[in-house]
Amino acid sequence: MKVTALGEILIDFTPEGKDEHGNPILVANPGGAPGNVLVALSNLGFKTNFIGSVGRDQFGNQLVSTLKEKNVGVEGIVYSDINTTLAFVHVDDKGDRSFSFYRNPGADMMLTKENVNVELIKNSNVFHVGSISMTNEPSREATLAALKYAKKNNVVVSYDPNLRPPLWEDLEEAKAQILNVMEYADIVKVSEEELEFLTGHKDLEAGALELYNRYNLTILFVTMGEKGSCLLYKSKWLNSAGIKVKAVDTTGCGDAFFAGVLFHILTNHLLERELENRDLEQLLEFGNIIGSYVALKNGGIPAMPTLSELEAYRESLVNDSN
Image (cartoon, rainbow, N blue to C red; front, side, top):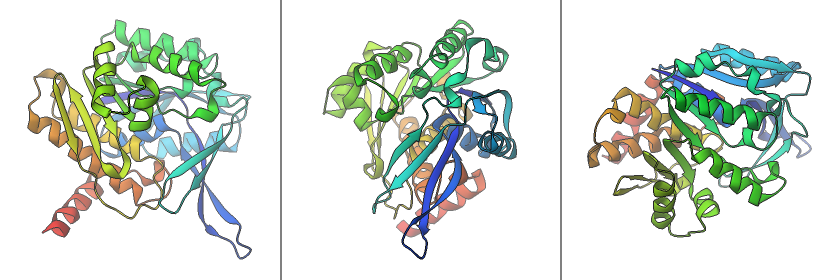
């Protein structure tokens, strides 16, 4: 199976303890939601490719080297004279994180439609995008051109809006652009906060129904952190409880969840038939397992497990419950 993603790849400066003076020690971890998803899928055995832009600097080189080490194809990456985008991650006592960005501009915004390697998209089973590439030009135009190409060539589109308010000048514009991409999407994952932002509904099922029906989605996932996840498929609405862990860093958990469900969908050819309740339950269970695994580790890309690590973790969860 092959998945190609377009979007941002950046450096997450993640806190790992404090020095003798009480100042946080920050570690430069490669990250960015589309990159996280691809590394997770690559670790699980899929062929993956990344389309995006990085700076001609040490951070850009670090990101490309990391993707290569993780067996993610980098022929879709272009270099920009603009510096690589940086994100500083703030983690609270519960492991929940917030972000400060250095991106005014950042190299990830510099991708043009002419830079997009459409052959990578054409030869993929799934084309994956987020909304951060929609914040500015020229990456917005590049994203829309790539999506149109994917649909023209009958490539399944997966979409994680991944709302980051500090990166948008105006939240109404953010909503409009996020929904613009929804027009092309087949498989979508949103957080419960993003679902309320996009639909105005506090009730998850009502919000999910509105989004699902309005954009004729194939399947919609809603993640709720430690509370678990939900999905909507046709008229079926399912909930799955979260896996209780002592989170170290929740960076990349949603990306791992999405990679997990894409892996399960493609491996089991679920898009080729009508899905039963057990299929849907297994999707949520698998997504929750990989998401909870990543919460136990620091960083996004470094935390993504291999299939053997995930199977060992899954077995430990079963043993702990007995």
